[in-house]
Length: 464
Image (cartoon, rainbow, N blue to C red; front, top):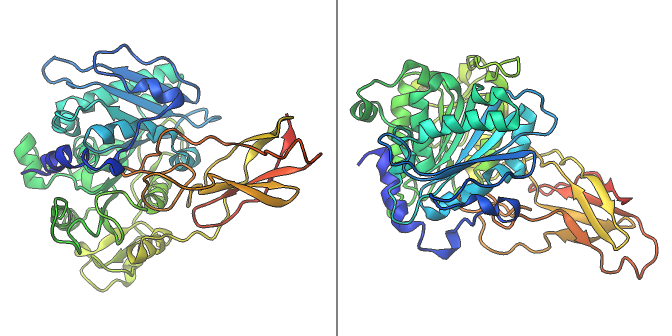
């Protein structure tokens, strides 16, 4: 069984059984995007979001199932420097969960910093469909993805969206997709994060395509990330095969000089756990190093290796590459000291520290009826856990007040589900003080609380 088929077969039967792992589709303005394959295109959605929908095709070589692509473009960015793709996994529920990927405030923080678009596909895979219909890009999803970039470029009036580099993140079957895209388009890809999967092996790729793995693929930074229960410490169960696949691929890719690392989450299985707290800083480091200096340029810079750190596979400590005395062609590759520190923390207990507070909320308003509303940007390292509401300098509430429902990893303002996408309906940035009218005149402020437990400076409210 090939890497490209392994998880499709498991997930078709597994991920739709337990109700707790359902990743619900976006509500609100995104509710119209989860359309059946024969439905009309979705209506326009609110700026800074843009969306295109394609029905499934009966033409040979084209994508047989429908798909919607939603992109978020950071407000104020004149010319984009790249596209960050957050690709969901296999199964009907995972596909629906992909509808909220572009709405994720934490991933938007990365896109904003790097002046990149954030794109989330949502394939219309039914319970009976084979995941191969889309997770093998040769079956039409590569072509459709590039068509979407062209159409979204026209819709958003960002023509560079069609040609700028890609950073690819994928979970499970989505990891299959991003791994195969690395083989097909290495010159377009800045970095690849593969959760609970691995790119194709050299012999498998040659069997599938008749071609060798292109040499350029080994120059693209890759991180293979999995849960310890996927075969590292738990040797049984449907996902225990993941570790063997990752280990073999890592040895082959690293043996060719590839810039590849492995990060094992000590707390999770096939769910994404706390992976975003390492994935986002890792991608930030790779994009900072590789994106062209001039916005809109398509030519990636080579990944610098002078600052690289190395670590033993399944180790918990890294060293500067110059000081590493083991076999460098068998060592986990990390781009710099900052990521090496975060990787070591993640390997130890699944947590990544963050000593800096988040940015304060903005546009804080209080209505005559006592309703507060605000806007906020997420902390790049730790996202948003909650908002603290203050009346006259005293905390009176936290939004959300109580975390409920299914989520993985750290509790967050946007509850993050099995596939690393926010649950629907998306939580709004609003709060009404029930005592506002009865207590006379008050001053209000809102603070952001990140998932590391640090508070921002207050965002004072103005009347409006």
